[in-house]
Image (cartoon, rainbow, N blue to C red; front, top):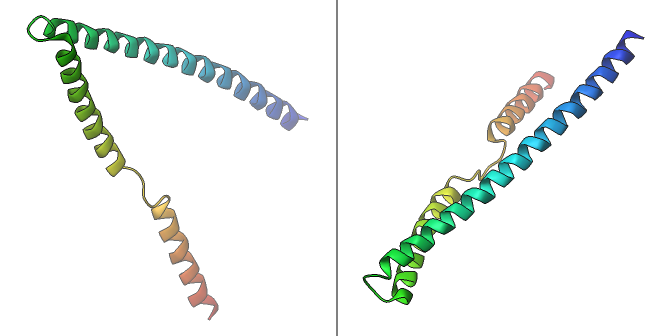
Length: 106
């Protein structure tokens, strides 16, 4: 009977933790959205500031090209750091264990 209560308690705790995590994720999503809007405001401000010394369309293109280059560089670095062989250590250990078992059984 005690185990059933422990299981019920664990289920309740998991549900409460999940609700808390969902609330935190929602808050982080709102914070990210507001941050992106703020960055957009800064980009517009840069374009307007540059428009005082050059035509507005040139300022817009210049800021856009710089941002595209930065985004491309960050994207390239992130892509090069991706996992190309998932669970490499686990696969190695499984192979070694299988080899050890074959040697023991042979």
